[in-house]
Structures are given as structure tokens and as C-alpha cells.
Length: 229
Image 1 (cartoon, rainbow, N blue to C red):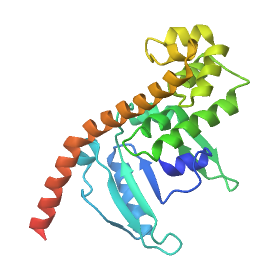
Image 2 (cartoon, rainbow, N blue to C red):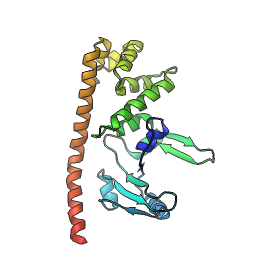
Image 3 (cartoon, rainbow, N blue to C red):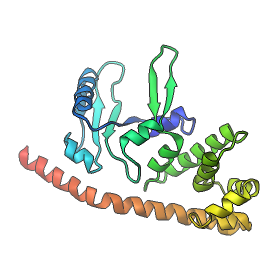
Image 4 (cartoon, helix red, strand yellow):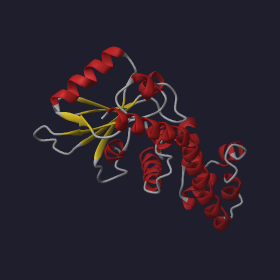
């Protein structure tokens, strides 16, 4: 659901960790701990593993020590900001089958784009690359869902101008939901670029507000661990 998923989609070249979204069920937790045991993974940060904590949006972080995966970090979550429940994300997933028959399940590109809307500046170029890659792959076969996704999520001003020209009725219909599309329709390239930058700042602030109470909880977890040690 993170950088490694972006690597599979061709939107990033390297990621230092693997992020997993898992279904919050006891049997899944048991399987997770069994695999972490095989990887000789140790928790490296707060919070401790607790389904109730995961349900509030926290991640649990591990570092692997087993041969072949030394130093690999694994982050686990069961809930993502502004994304639907696991069952919906699972139904929309992308599945890649390796040559040995093993399957790798990724968040769909639209869901991954939403998951990457964070405070971190490094995530926004990946969002642009994900949307651009999706467009290049499917541009010759547009449908209503793909057009809506491109118009809603494209972060490249010139691409938005092209999209507004290619799909004028769809762009006009979506302008109320994403006002900067009106600047692509006009077109007004300088103001469109400014609006894209403002949109990023607004999303970053939204993410900051979401994480603020979780950060306070993290401090409480940290104090509790210090008191217990």
C-alpha cells in the first residue's frame, strides 16, 4: 500500500520498507505474527501491537533480522485516512502474478493515490507519476471511471489542459467538485499551476490535522513504555 506498491506500478525506483494493510481479524493477526517470526522481525517503535490501536489508524513498525531480509522494515496498518474498509479496497485491488505463481496484491492506483496524500513532500511526485502512468496505459481506452480519475487526480497542469480539451463535458461536470478544472477549461495555465500548489498544501494540512491526535496518543504510548521499562 506504500512505496513498494508504487515501485510495482513504475512510479518509484526504490523504497526502504514494505507497508501492508491487513484485514482486522484474529486469524489474520495470528498469520501476521507467524510470518514476522519467520522473518525474525522485532518491533522498532511505538505503539505496541494492539488491534484496538490499529483500528484508530496507527501503524506498527518492525525491522527484520532473518537472513536475506536483514534491515528490511515492515509497517502494518488496518485503517487508512479517507479510504474505505479493507473489504472494499480488496475488491478493487490489483493482483500481479509472479512467474512462480505467487500473487502480489496491491492497492488499486486510485486508492494508492489517495493513500499517498500525506504531509510528506516526497509523496506528491509519486502521485503525479501514478496518475500519469495510469493515463499512458489506458489513454486509448477511456471510460467514465478512468476519465473521472484522471480529471480528479492529475497533478500535471499540461495534462489537465489536454484532458479538459479531450473530455470537455466531463471536465465541466467535475469543475464543481474540483474548482481548478475551470482553469484548465478556460485555459489559464499560470493560475492552474498556482491552484495545483494550493491543492497540495490543503491536502497536507488535512493530513496534519488527521494525525495530530494520533501523535498525542503516540506520546502517551511512549511515556507508558518508559514507565514500564
